[in-house]
Length: 401
Image (tube, rainbow, N blue to C red; front, side, top):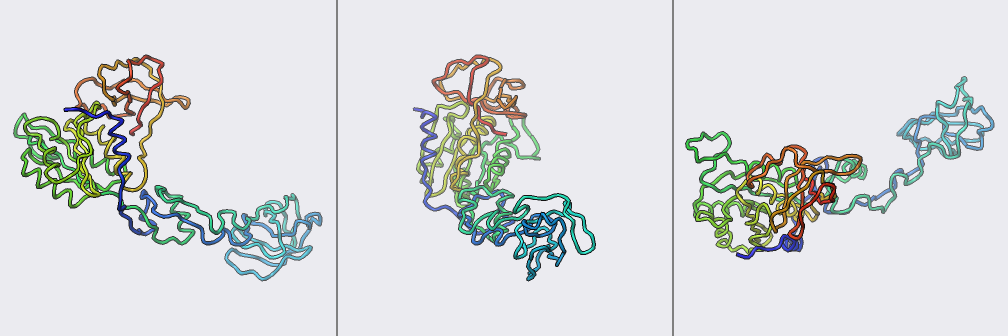
């Protein structure tokens, strides 16, 4: 079996075209974490009129040398004041109030002393002080939030100020999760044989899908029976946008998932990649739905989910993966023994703005050591062409926590 170069598999994944993105309108307060499917454009100026930014007195700046001004009126926030500021007078004005006509400056209450119906100016201010200009916050016609933005708290606040009740967003992909293996035990299930192992893949995948903005459908564990797997995968495909399976994609006698994917009429985008861990990764497509067959070992399935499932979840929302690749410095040597793209669990630290890595607490062994993902973990990325690395070398790491 010929295995594909890792970069080629990434190229195929990146080049996938989605012909029908799922979009819907959601009530504003329910959109946190969704990806915006429209531009948000201001339909008015904010503020629409000159507005007070502090509590104080609205004045004509040219009157400051008078040192004493008569208080002619009071201007609470929200009122439609008709009084104007005329020479030698001022109007008491509050934060958020429209500036009275005739006034061009606000002098704070801290800068004056009130004597009867007059103010005594103790400290002058520059022209236009504490007056919010028209459009200071945003101007009519300005694009404030662009399509493709992942909605955060500030976006919700701005949309609320524009009275955007139900913005259009991309639906989060529904991701069905199946773990195959007759030896697997569900959470809470009683162990009756030493050959049985507790399943972790389906639960870590559920957590990953939630963390990276998909909607998981947990379908649990199923035995290594071809007809049973065919039935469950077909059902999963009907109710989801992405089906993620673990196990059954290798070359063993009971590895049926790869055969089932073909029998379901899916187009296999690739099967087998020169990557460690997870070389038997399989990605297939049926219309706008996808099946990703991950390896059965826990560390392998976790790493390949980060590499292939997370970007696909983002792609179905017309955005890109939030995983970051950064430069780091090795504190210790790293021996590369295999001609594959490797993703090796490492411990990272951030010191004076620079990333450093070592392998403290990380075990060497099979692709089943899930505990290597605990703590401040990143993945050291080395290519097929890379040679062994030395302390002080600059390397690439994928931040995953």
